[in-house]
Image (cartoon, rainbow, N blue to C red; front, top):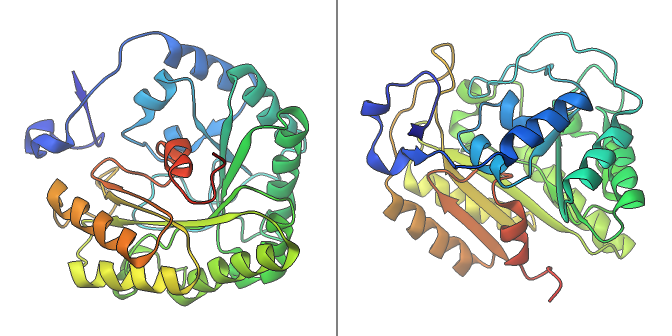
Length: 301
């Protein structure tokens, strides 16, 4: 049995985008724990094609600050609209889930909360600190929004000392008005550069990371330029994956990029100086994040 984008006829997908579902019951245990602790994951919210695989391996990417986003990017399956107030005990619930799942590498992301004065930065920082208090040896990666360019909010997250600060540019600048009209490509680069500089000035050992989707109408040269821009912003880790349309209401796939092109981009990115690169059809920003981190220059031996 195979799985892929939920609204697509599997026969229309190229063979490299068909994935066999894993066997075993670990996935049900993860889903049950998340339900018990009333926690959301981006795996489910974004309809990730790797969800069954990751759950089956006993891991997940936690989605905090609610399950509704204040923005409406045209590639993303997470619902938009008026979110609820942040759940005060959510950081501790995430930490409890990490302990019970036995995680040694924790990945936390959030919806964009433009309705909050700090964009939810303090809530993200509290979650980092809660995980550290319960799992002192675990590595923590956070995937943040752009906080509307408020660098004090970036500072709040960096000062909580995540091992990886991730912020995705998502696509090439030419496509921003169509793909993520409420975002800004220069702003995203500034967030990454600022986070890197803040960590360096504070003596914090922290990698910066970003990712983009392909198959939305970009050219190979535009992808290369994004890679150069990210390196110019001090970005250390890069992910590149295939965009898959989550529903008929979202942007259609312009093309399915062949695996060989991903391999070429990966080689080129490594030559540019990225510490670690993951590029492939099923790659997502948080997919196999621990393995990607272990391949980076900042990872402990």
